Every structure is written in structure tokens, then in C-alpha cells.
Amino acid sequence: MSTRRAHVTRETRETRVEAELLLSPGPTTVDTGIPFLDHMLDSLCRHGGFSLRLEARGDLEIDDHHSAEDCALVLGQAFDEALGDRRGIARFGHAYAPLDEALARAVVDLSGRPFSHVDLGLKRERLGTLACENLTHVIASFAVAARATLHVELIRGENDHHRAEAAFKALALALRAAVSPTGSSEVPSTKGVL
Picture 1 (cartoon, rainbow, N blue to C red):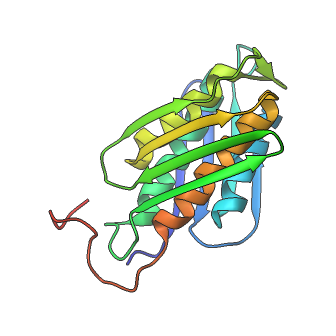
Picture 2 (picture 1 turned 135 degrees about the vertical axis):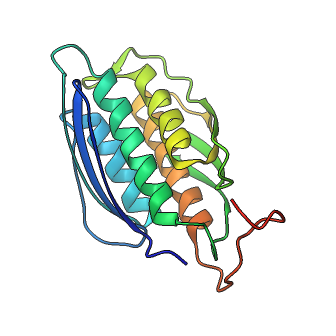
Picture 3 (picture 1 turned 60 degrees about the horizontal axis):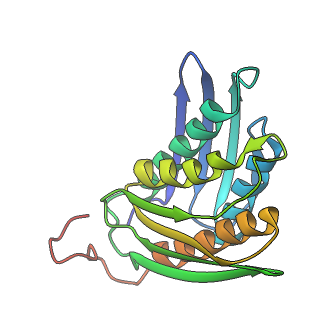
């Protein structure tokens, strides 16, 4: 099994993002310059049982897209690196999470094959300073960089804040289950590799 930790830095002309991730409980500090994104990533790690320090500086004077996307890519890459060869993990996880009237479902396969289906059904244009379309993009970008298959769907809900937060909490709980150590030294695949 890997050390379950990673340190990743991504620097472009648009952003600079640095993350330290540990796939076990610990402190979480997130500063992306986008408060609602901070809230979602903090929720993802706290409920997933992960420790994260993520700092980002981006061209927010243009808009929030580059920063949101690059934070997701860095977090996904850190997640992938922390998993190593994915030996000894459960691999699959699923969870439901409510937040008041909202109910979300997430299903995860840490297959090494990136895919995402995300249906949040958000109605507002923005939550704080974050464009709602970027919430879906964050999950999809995370899936690509983490080399994970993710299905995240809202079953019901009226309040977009609740809908988004329920989705991130469901994803957190599904990821927690998928990364759980099984006590085996095997890669959980008939192929012998993920």
C-alpha cells in the first residue's frame, strides 16, 4: 500500500495551485480565492476523512473558471498519487447524503479509468462568486486527474446551496469507502492493475 499522501503543485500563466493531501483524517485548510469552492472542497475532505492543505492564486479578475478547474485537477492528481498502485483498497464506494430537503447520491470506482456523470440540477447562475456550471466542472476535472469513475446525482432538493453541498458530501462519503484499506495486498482488479 502507498504512503497515502501526496504533494502537487501546478503553475500556469493563469493559476498557481499547491496541495498537500493525506488520505486519513487531519486538518483541512483551503484557500482558493473563491469562498464557495473553499466550502465545497473543505466539506469533501472533512467528510471523506482526508487531510488537505490547498492554496491557489488565479486570474479571478477574468472569472472563476481557471482557478476552479486547476484546483480540481491538482486535488485529483494528489488523490491519484496518494493512492499509488491502488493496492489494498476497497476500490468501490457509494453513498447518499442529505442536507435538509436535498438528497444526493454518489457512486465511485477507483478504476484508473476517468469518467464522470454529474447531474446537480442547479438553477442559479452563481453560488457566492462561483459559477454553478463550475461545480459540475470541478467534479468532472477531479475525476479525470484522479483517474476515477464518478456518478454524482441530485435525487431531490430545492435550495441550490443545499443541492451542491449534499452532492459534495455524498461524493466524500463514497470516496471514503473506496479508499478504505481492505487488509489485502492485492490490487482490486482481475487485471492485476488499476
